[in-house]
Each structure stands twice: as C-alpha cells, then as structure tokens.
Image (cartoon, rainbow, N blue to C red; front, side):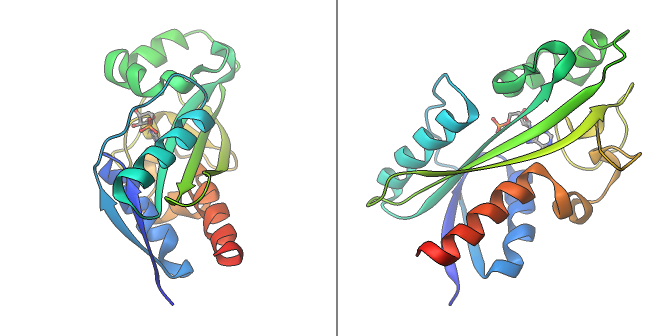
Length: 186
Ligand code: IMP
C-alpha cells in the first residue's frame, strides 16, 4: 500500500531529493509550503517542534527536515545558523573564513521530524562526512553543495547529479531511517 506523507518545506531542492529517495519505499510525498516557526535550538529541537506544529495544522502525518553544514575548524559553525549564514555571508564568506585553514573537515547533518496529530514527534538523524573545497565547484545541487567534498570522492556535491547525491547524502540517511521506521511502526 502506498503511504501518503506531506513534506512541509519551502525548499524545492529538498522535495526533489526526497521524492527520489522515497521512490523505492512506496512513500508518496506531497509537498506543502506551510511555514512553521523555527525555534532557537539544535536541529533536533527545530525538527521536533516543526513536525508537531505542522501535524496539528495539517491534521495529518507530516515530515519536516532541518539541515546544516558543520565545519570543525570553525567550532562547528555555521551549524544551526546555516540558513542565515547562507543568505548573509554566502559560500564566498565561508571560503574567506577558511582561507588559510588546513583542517577542512566538515559534515552535513539532516534531521527529519515526523509527527501525526495523535502521536509524539519522532526524529531521525543523517550525517555525511567530508571536507571543504578551496573554491566553489559545480552547478548541481544548492546552497553549500559546491563547497562540500564527501569522503571517498574528489568532486563536490555541486559536481555530482541529484541521483548520485541521493545515494549517500545526509538527507538520504535521515529519510531512509524514517522510511524503515515507518514500515515497522505504522
Ligand atoms: P534548512 O534550515 O534545513 O533549510 O537548511 C539550512 C541551510 O543549509 C540552508 O541555507 C540550506 O539551503 C542549506 N542546506 C540544507 N541542506 C543542504 C544540502 O543538502 N546541501 C547544501 N546546502 C544545504
């Protein structure tokens, strides 16, 4: 049986990635740009609160997702400020901060929050490890993708296709954890 779940996000890139990832799980994703208050806190706090808020508004099962880029040499900045930093500092600003920095370790984290009007929120974390490039590379993907080289690759997320990114990205891991959980819990 196909399950229908609403993905509450304003980011079309995320919707396209999620649809690709869910294909093999028999989950049909509907998209709604409802908007929800992004509270101050960890990715987990934001996802938990957002899912609960959206499920009560929509009156049905929803997922939300909160993600960020965490750079070790910058004390895990921008992290939960990723959205604001992307809009203000941009990728060029991040590269400036990392100008002479040798330790380029970074990771993307994605937390999916799932909730129904009758249940408490559940959260699912996905992390992908890698390092930062020295310049923006590639036109695929979005936001920080042209900066991030996943472990085992020499191309950035901006230089690979959505299908390739979907094979092992942070979002793939968090959404797949959610899909497996759903299979056994609904
Ligand atoms: P959000 O709050 O989860 O929408 O994401 C925080 C910031 O990280 C936004 O600027 C996003 O565009 C960016 N971001 C989230 N996921 C990714 C990704 O998979 N690749 C590149 N940037 C991302």
